[in-house]
Image (cartoon, rainbow, N blue to C red; front, side, top):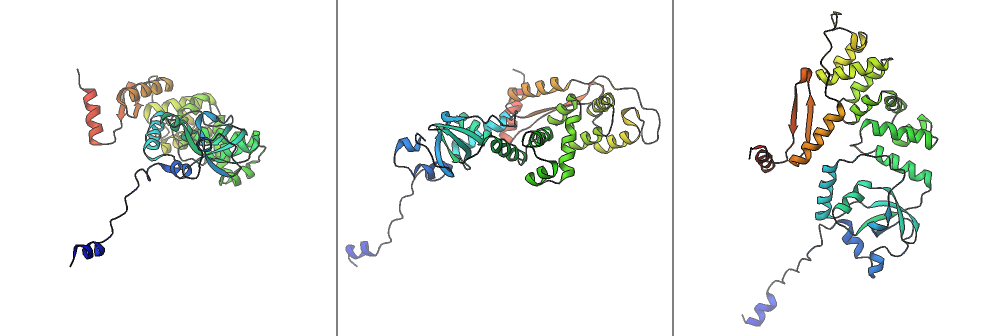
Length: 316
């Protein structure tokens, strides 16, 4: 067979793979739909119900944002993911001017994008008045899995008071029954120290619901401190409440033991956790116990991460 025929019958070379086609998230798809750089950077008005690349400097924070606390470690992890993969889900904005937008939802994605150094991010533009802004921001946050119980309760309260929703209507909007909504709203009647403990996961929702049934705030606080000091289970707390609150004895009805030693304030625990988390570059939990005892837990993601932490712990 001649060389000419061999070349004719040889299989066609595989087309070259376009580098960078994957791993850039929604940004790559959106960039391809624009011809002018000014349009890619969001320097022209975008129609309602459209998706476009919007400069982060043109996006104002949502004044109705119900979340006030964002885990910085989780935010840095999201920023690293965005550097590698890009934005997977666009944020939602409303346009307030030619080159001015206001965030409706996607606060974490916006903050993480800034940390990742992005100039512009994909955004869905929609029409919304102030009340719709508040309602959408609250409901979107309520539906997040990592929202703590106090944040949910405060969001419910704002929907009731600021959006003029009845508890039945609120339950329909967020997909919860009325009793669930009521239980969350009752958490806001607890003393501030207990609300902070629930927010910071020092106690659970089950602990808080048991404490709510105690009428005296002094007794609520007394039992709360005992929960933290003795690491009481929800079942034990419910039993103590049935027997008369924190002054009650064990199930035998005997006189309660002497009050435990004062526990470390919750605020001091959280400060210590933040300091150690920054020191080790990993999440650290400080769990106080009775009589001044307790434990410190340092999380690690891999064997290499564990070795890194152990190296830090070694004396220099």
